[in-house]
Image (cartoon, rainbow, N blue to C red; front, top):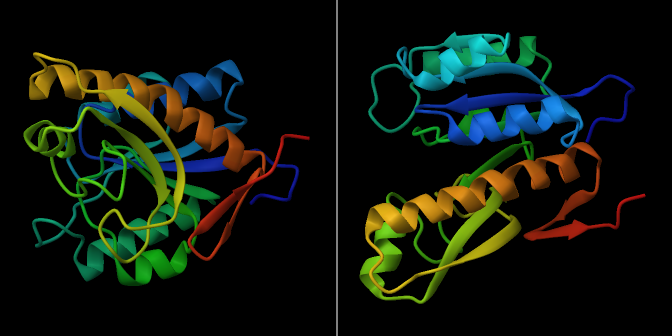
Length: 211
């Protein structure tokens, strides 16, 4: 995606603790993920993710989400786009960002917004997917990294990893194992995107072997 010689630049959006952000930042620092984190933005002023970013010397910003509960309002959307443009990001990475992105934001960053979801999509989209899987009685669930489109958890799938549902699992124990898988899969997929090893063709994501 980035054909210049400058480092591939990530913009991270999140709302909470930032466990996936930390895994991504650690992968960047170790050179496993050939990218730099250009900016970290949260819709929650007290999000621990912002403090974790500042501890690593990374630009970290709170931008108020506006008047809606589940999405950005128009002014907030403009502010988020401006912050990411100014940071010259190549890819927008959602790491527990609890707002639905729509409209102008996705037009501005078409095929450049990625998310990780705690199920094997298209099964169990939406909130608390691990609880949905447990309640349904499936024997396997997992995680999905996908591009974001105008739907909810409906964008082209980049990669998936299965997680077994064990006898005696609770929502908390299953969620913890899913999060472990997330922290492995997400940085690996972002590294492939940074190296230009993935392209989109309609709903298909085409991977090529590393050079």
